[in-house]
Length: 222
Image (cartoon, rainbow, N blue to C red; front, top):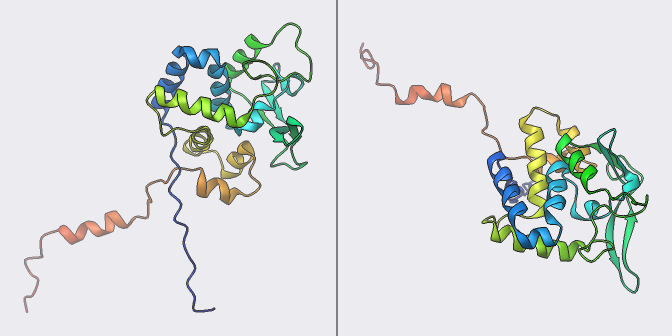
């Protein structure tokens, strides 16, 4: 066993949206009549603004939103229980699962605009088109159709999570901060699966430049 080499992961590097792609996709979703009818523009905006899992976004209730503080409390996720239907399963009582995250101002404005005057504390913020809790599976199918129509067939809800993590990394925020944002207990999960692979600045390139230099005219003399 001591002589057995460890097996390296063959997982592909995370693919994320570049900022121009994120802006273009957002505009196309907002202009898509089917997407609007299914209330997906605001739902995908929340994806881009938070990096929350699809079930976590579907589980947000108005009592968990603090518009003045510009923050949302992640309390659980929507799951389907056989014989019962859709329910909000509470998040584990840990920093990784149960957390409060800040939102960009444009996301706060979106939430403020969609909040009904008679909103009740336990009402879901992002309901299904016909009311009630959103089914994550059905929503994923709707998102796939919308992404394909926009010319981004490779995008999934997970790509939004990777985009948020990669933008945090590019901005110099810590891996711990990104892990807390995404709800990961282990920083290594965020680094290995959600950060884009960067160019390795090892210093070797500068040193290896000498290989292409012409031979010294004194080489071989004496």
